[in-house]
Image 1 (tube, helix red, strand yellow):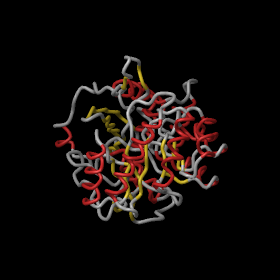
Image 2 (cartoon, one colour):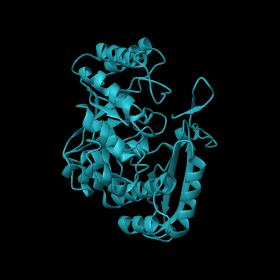
Image 3 (spheres, one colour):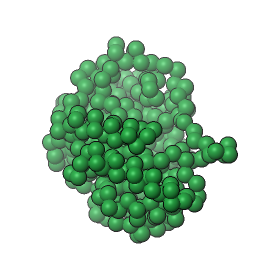
Image 4 (cartoon, one colour):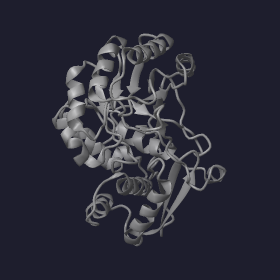
Length: 371
């Protein structure tokens, strides 16, 4: 079997789909994307296609090594995301060729259902609580929100009190049994992050994500040592090498590699295995489309130290059979490959030019704030 073509599609709202063709008629799908840099990643996929066309897609590890190590420059969001989508497509083809879902090829499933968490955002405290109540009614038992916008280096007591009030309203809306994660987006300084975590400890949180800049591992570790709330990080880290120091320094106990950014399905499984040694749990980052989610679910199914799965789409308007939520969970897809079928006719209505840009935050004085 040989790869004959790599085809990319820009899909609203901000996704990039990859269709890998072979000379035996089998096709595989992946989702290589960096939010706000779709065209750049698609160009990287095309560059990598110069090597891949004519190669056997089932040599997944070999091709990963060639694409990661063979170009001298390694890692980073663009190159690793391009590799990630390509790797997903190769797994999809391999599973289809063998008539098996990917999780069987990773050692078999260790669970039958995957717990998802819902996003519960809103511009006001009331909107956030209302959104959470709506998601609770839909069956979700786990939620995540970002409780603030721009954050200055040193915030006052009023800021802390407003954050606590927002989270308290969310807790009241979903009840004491639901799981709540907070995403700080790496915006606060270490002192502000520690103050916030101390104030939020009574809220019984599932985790606080990126309490400070995630590339500063010592800063993450300082926050982790200062609070009883589990610290989560990893969406902006790439490959197992990006997670080594995080785990060694106990900077996060919830690791969040993105299967479309961190290196693909097998790389995320390797990262999870590293985390298991350090008593860390896996909660894959996935604010992308249904192909990326399907790849995550295959990893989740075969990973003992899995916690909860992020998502924004169950595949409506893109998959022939969208995933179905029951009691806050989805059943592990058991079809061959990634276990989902892309509806190309429906997808055609969502194609665009790939020009989505990452939103920006600004301080009152016109200075740029971290998003």
